[in-house]
Length: 221
Picture 1 (cartoon, rainbow, N blue to C red):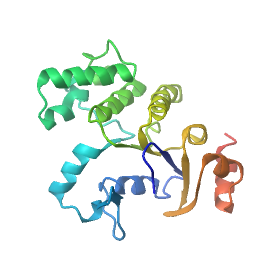
Picture 2: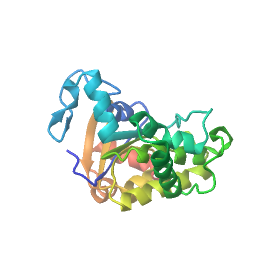
Picture 3: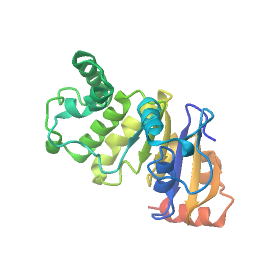
Picture 4: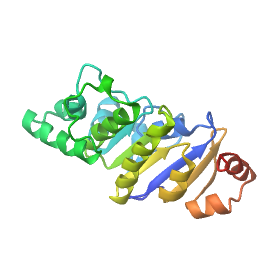
């Protein structure tokens, strides 16, 4: 259960099921069993039309591979979802410019996305997701495709979102971010949630041996 305004972070080794879990939350992966409830509505029972409408109105996702359109500039990428929604050009460009400024890319709105650094491209992807004004923002390892020196700029944007009360579900290997920013941490292994709790408890006194082994390995880096 994830209350509004929570930063819910999922950690674990590669292949443990983290991305599969977070992709179930917007039905990019369809669960074989169980329910996914959003304000009492079960996403698992929605047909494709209902699901598309739900995604447009409630949830956005930021992927590790950016997913930008190379033939559009920064403004065109950020405004795309608003265009699909039917917003007028003036309205969508105004909204897109606000989001571009929010992620620190003022002055880059007419730059081709293929000419940006990886960190800047990921910030464009975050701005595009935010432009849809989602109630929940999903992140699937948003820094894993970045060079180490670019990770900080993306995490800084995510920290700002956390301070502004955005509800976020984040799959990440960035342990410091999980420890310092999250309100709840889940540790997964072999497709199972092994441990869940507030970051202070999970990172300083984990109850499960597998959690302790994982943190000893990754926090020492």
